[in-house]
Length: 79
Image 1: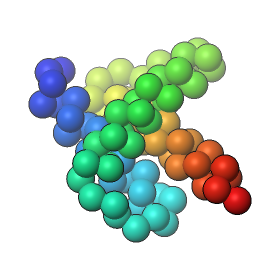
Image 2: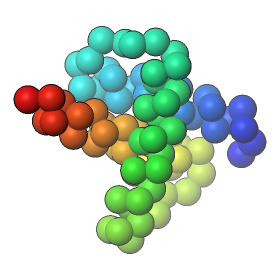
Image 3: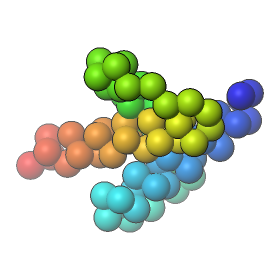
Image 4: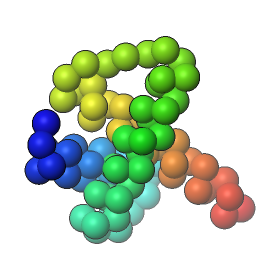
């Protein structure tokens, strides 16, 4: 997957994570940032758990799980 595909996955992952966490949409750039960070976090967590997903759907799922974790941790730190 190229750069454009990764950007699209990042935007979608950030958007879905915002919706899952009932957070208002903060814009396309925030969703992209959240999706990219989520991809790293999700990949790290799944690697620790020895879970492997394949293909584009697997990348999207991993990024969504990671982005939700990032939003959850951020919400806990704000309290």
